[in-house]
Structure formats: structure tokens, C-alpha cells
Amino acid sequence: MPVVDLNADVGEWDLEPPSSEAELFTVISSANIACGVHAGNQRSMARTVELAAAHNVSVGAHPSLDDRANFGRVETPVSPVAVFDLVVAQGRTLADVARLRGVPMRHVKPHGALYNMAARDRQLADAIAEAVAALDASLVLVGLAGSELLAAGQRAGLRTRSEVFADRMYRADGSLVPRSTAGAVIDDPATVAARAVAMVRDGCVVAADGSTVAMVADTICVHGDTPGAALLARRVRDSLTAAGIDVSSGR
Image (cartoon, rainbow, N blue to C red; front, top):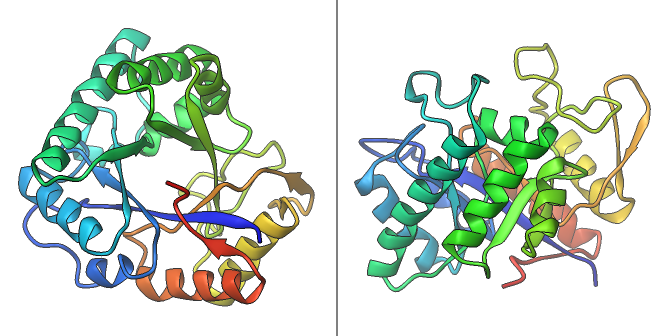
């Protein structure tokens, strides 16, 4: 039976979690937890780790550029040395929070602009991979399918997980259409679910220009801040199961 991970970016709040976040944890198999830089704080990390543990969801760090004002989604010049330090610091922060609760941190997935920059830039990608290896060489590095980040992880001797986005539109080169572009985010549950199944079963997705983009789908992201995220994730998971695809973090 084919197997795919279903992940979500979570813990991106400061005072109280969105009402749908607890429900989301009943569906996903991996959680990428904000480490207090682009969003979140010690309280949000602790509560999110506890929620993950309660639902047997794998915990991972979601490190970002140091740009809280823009939620870490604006690309800005940054050196590989600075990126290394950012990823190590944020990874250690979450790992410490998780360890205090008896929960292992199992993966790292960069957030927002850092994720997109590392998908293209070999030097930044290598810095992230080296940071993850410095944290714990057994961690899995999650990156965009076909990206420089995955190649960097492999060079660093890390296990990697190729990520796809069923709710995002792709360009013909396999990169994501920027969120600022109309139609970049797909919110129709049936469409998103069908794309998820095709990505895993057929290893491809239809790009914005109508071309077919080949990709490996080890993990599918459902954005936790998307309205109706829990219902969308449930629709995706049910469709995967109906297609004979098992959902698991593969720990």
C-alpha cells in the first residue's frame, strides 16, 4: 500500500490557538511547530507539543527568518551563516520544549520565505542542512519536491522528505505560484483532495499553465491557517484512504 505523510504548519499563535487547530490534530500525522520567531512563543510551543503527543502526531520544528512583522513570508537578503544560526537556535528551542514533555523532535521544515529561498539557493540550502545535522543527524529534513533543499539534505547525509502542496498552484518549473497571485491558493476541498491523490498515485500535478509537473510526494502539507483547515485535511485524508493510500508519518 502506498504511504504518505500529512503535515500542517501549526502553533502559529501567541495567546490562544485557533478553534480548528485541535481538530486538525485528529487528522494529520506530522506537525511543523512555529519556534517563536515568525509566530508563537513558549506557551504556544508547549501546548502544541502536548496536543501532538495526545494524538500521536510527529513533532517537527518550523524555523523562519527573523521577521515577525511579516510572518516570515517576505524574502530578504540573509547570509548562510545567519541562516545556520537561525535554524540551530529555533530547532534547539523547540527540541528543549518537547524534551521536557517527553516528546522527541523528529523533523525540521523551514517556514515561508526561508523555505522558498532555500528551494532555489544552494548556499542557503546547505546552511539549513548543516544546521539540521548539527542539531541531530537523525532528524528528517522536509523540503519542496525537486528543490535545492532536498539535494542539500542528501549531501549532508540526512534523511529527507519531499513535500507537495495540494492547495497551492505550481509553476511549470515545480516552484509554487506566489501567494500574491490570484488563484495561487486553492480552497475548493474536492479539487484539493483530487490533487493530493494524483500527486501520490501518479507522481505529478497540473501546473498553472496546463503543463504536467512530475514530483515525488512523501508528505502533503495542509496549511493550518487556511480557513476550514481541519475539514480540508479530513477531506484530503479520506480521499487518500479511499484511493488505497495509507497516511502515516513513517516514524
